[in-house]
Image 1 (tube, one colour):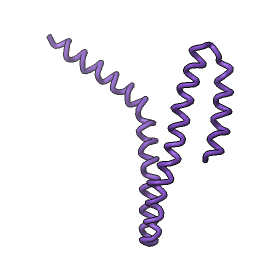
Image 2 (cartoon, rainbow, N blue to C red; image 1 turned 180 degrees about the horizontal axis):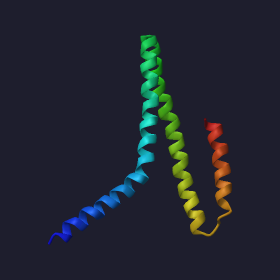
Image 3 (cartoon, helix red, strand yellow; image 1 turned 135 degrees about the vertical axis):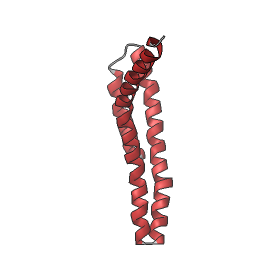
Image 4 (cartoon, rainbow, N blue to C red; image 1 turned 90 degrees about the horizontal axis):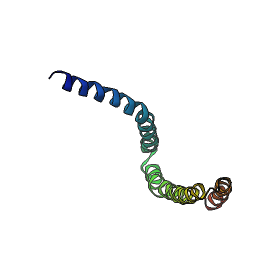
Length: 108
């Protein structure tokens, strides 16, 4: 009777370590990305209220727009590249990547 729970906890601990090993860097990256905007607003708040308003607008509007463009480009590339791999046209991956860079630099 004792072997069941002990084996479960041992397996749970092993899988949990593996999960944290994979997810830890992603969590750290997300925290750093959020902290960058928050720290910028804190510094701007110490300078003045007009500067804080400008930084707030930049963080919410302009950064949101650029993330939207990048997310749209990534979604389009995911579809096109998946279709190219499924059709066996591996050489199209480079062409799609080059075209997306050209479009991205024009839009940005």
